[in-house]
Length: 204
Image 1 (cartoon, rainbow, N blue to C red):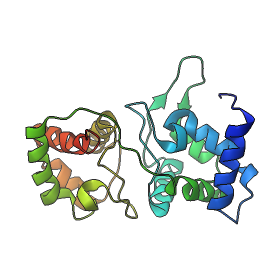
Image 2: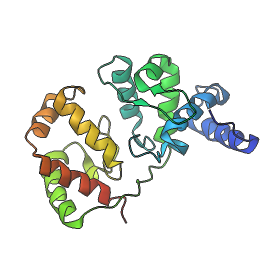
Image 3: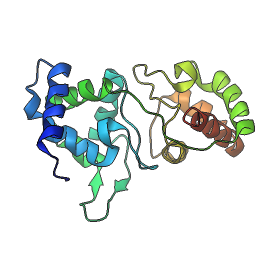
């Protein structure tokens, strides 16, 4: 874990104090720093295969952690040079309910910053139509609105999103039946178009 200067730590503690009255800020500073080690400052990942978690809804964050803790969703093993390998399931299982709630409170209040990615405009236009037809019912605002269980798609890293499509189709990730049926009907070209549409949100 990177050693941060006193100003950084005091700033983080100040943010945590504003986020939650139920958990003493210094109790979760290390937890936030641990999350930032992979997911980037304030949860805005700079790694294409690691999701941005800033701005997710409070309930959505809790639900995601619940499925990791129950091994209902298997995360990739992530490794940075010179640092220990991390697995989201193992991390989530070591956290208490209070830890998870405090982290959900913190990251849900951080602004989501769209990943900077290039996108093919023609494919993105087709992807927008597909999103309206297949995804908008749950993923509002062209996938930009954090709503309950629905993760933010617009501006999320497409490398990460493609892995989620693959995991869902292979059965490695369990999703609601209605979502699985819709994804199963998508062609490879459809998925590519959707990813281009979501990437376009960060290519502005």
